[in-house]
Image (cartoon, rainbow, N blue to C red):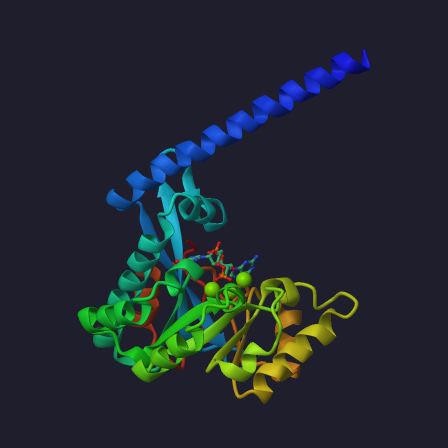
Length: 291
Ligand code: C2E
Ligand code: MG
Ligand code: MG
Ligand code: MG
C-alpha cells in the first residue's frame, strides 16, 4: 500500500513539474511577443525626504501587462527573461525609456528641477564590455541630464569580480551619473568593496526595514544607516510601510525612504498629475492611483 501511495505521489509530483515547465516555456514565448507588442511598461515609485515627505525622485520599475494573465510581477518574469537571454535587451529598453521620460519631465515641469530617476541595472547588462558607451549614447540620444540619473547596482555585480568593475564605475562617475548600491546587505559579499567603489547612495533592503520590530532588527538597520552616513553616502530605506518604521528611521538619522506608506509605484499619468498640480519639490508625496 505504501508503495502504491509512493508511486501516486511520484506521478502527482511529476505532472506538477511538467505543468510548471510548460508554463515557463509558455511565459518565455509570451515574453518574446511582449517586447514587440509593447506590453512592457514602466511605473515610477516616489523616493521621499523622510522628514518633509517631499518627493526627491523616482525609481523606475518594470511591469508586464500580459493579455490573459494580467499584471505579471517582475519576480516571475525577470528570471524567465534571464534564462531566455532576453533580459539584457529589456534592460536597455528600460534605461532608454526611463531617460526619455525623465528628460521630458525635466523639460516641461518647472517644479521638477531637483528630481532624479533611479534605474535598476542587472549584472549581465553591467558586465557587457560596452556598458559605459551604451549608457553614454542613451544619455546623448534622449537629452537626459546625467546628474539626474542614478543607476542601481546590486552586490551581485560586485561579487562577479569582473576585473574592470572599478574602472566602469569611475567612468560612469565621470559622465556625471550617480551610483546606488541596491538591496544592501542581502548579497553575501564582504564590505571591502566599499573602500574601492565610488558609490553615492546606499539602499537599505526591505527585508531589514520590515524586521526592525524584531530582536536585533533595529540595531542592524541603525548600523547600516550609520555605515552609509560615515562613508558620505545618501541612505534610502526601502519598503517603509508603517509610521512606526518612519519614526525609527528618522530617529536614527536616515534621510530618505521609499515605500507603500508614502506611495505605491505610479503610472506615468499619475506622476504627471503630481508634477502638474503641485509645485515640487515643496509638496508632500500624496499617494495617487496605484500601479
Ligand atoms: P528593487 O529594485 O529592490 O525594487 C523595490 C521593490 O520593492 C519593487 O518591487 C517595489 O514595488 C517594492 N516595494 C516598494 N515599496 C514597498 C513596500 O512598502 N512594501 C513592499 N512589500 N514592497 C515594496 P517590484 O517592482 O516588484 O520589483 C522587484 C524587483 O525586480 C526589484 O527590486 C528589482 O530587483 C527588479 N526589477 C524591477 N524593475 C526592474 C528593471 O527595470 N530592471 C531590472 N534589472 N530589475 C528590475
Ligand atoms: Mg532597485
Ligand atoms: Mg531595492
Ligand atoms: Mg529590494
